[in-house]
Image (cartoon, rainbow, N blue to C red; front, side):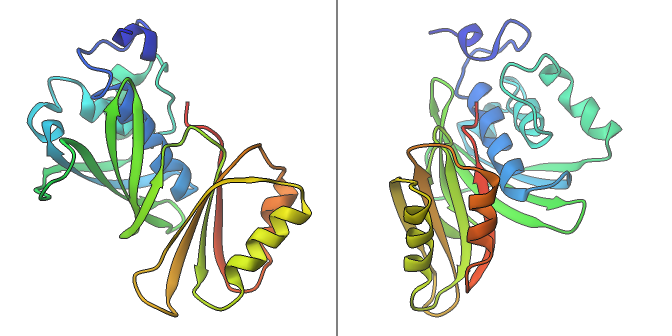
Length: 220
């Protein structure tokens, strides 16, 4: 598979890891933010840090943060578009011991004050893995319908969510719970076997101890 199979003929680059994967990573971060981004501080590790300008990784990440898909013809001009829409962005080189060489950390601020920090890796062929959300461990790739549920770590919170999905006949394909400390903010990451209606998302948001619910369709 070559780069044109992944991102189309407009986006030219030597590696799908540094271009298509980077777009998808930025797009997932944009979805998690849930609103237009006005500021992006992007940390790059390893190969990303060494080659991001030559391989167009900077343009790809910003394109994703602007909501573009990997085949969007505007990707080569994403930095110019970012200035036009007043998205402020910075790139910095970071060192993370034993990190994957194609790692990026995206700190985003939204137009209405939302914030998120997404750490992920581009693993080849345009595929990604999100490894951290707001400093908490995560493990999803954006290839499936996914719920990201921030909640207060209280007894019954997980059961309430799984019960609501059961009542709506929604099957859980993969589940991960992350919490840095007991009884504080935690995150459920739930990959689903099927898409869900908006009403299901609204039902989850009304459950006790739920802080926020983000529902993401596949990142392509």
